[in-house]
Length: 142
View 1: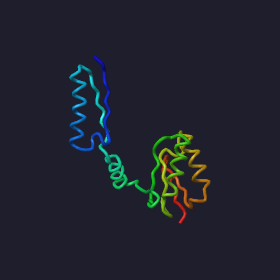
View 2: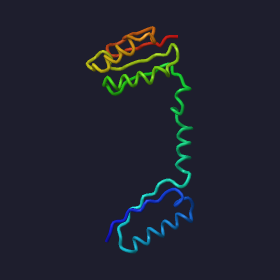
View 3: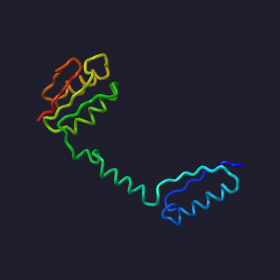
């Protein structure tokens, strides 16, 4: 007895008749005594439609057209990750918008260094505050 992996997608599952044809192929292998694993991907045209629906529904569809008044960074504490976050968020902040960080100026040197280099040393921000022990906030210039 063989193990047979059968993959179908696109036009081979585009309509009911074609799906029945796929079932006949699978049944033939099962009837021959084989163990069958069937992998089915999207029907013809479905992948493009799914991608279109996701893009349409996504809040992140086209971030270049959006501006935010507040962004809060609280994730990976590495220097590279925080720099990446800052570099990607700052262009999306509206003038006068706030960029805030958790775990600022604590034991996370990557966070501390990124804030010092990318925010405190930057002329893009006109107000820089540390209102609590581990919260840092900066306001983008108007």
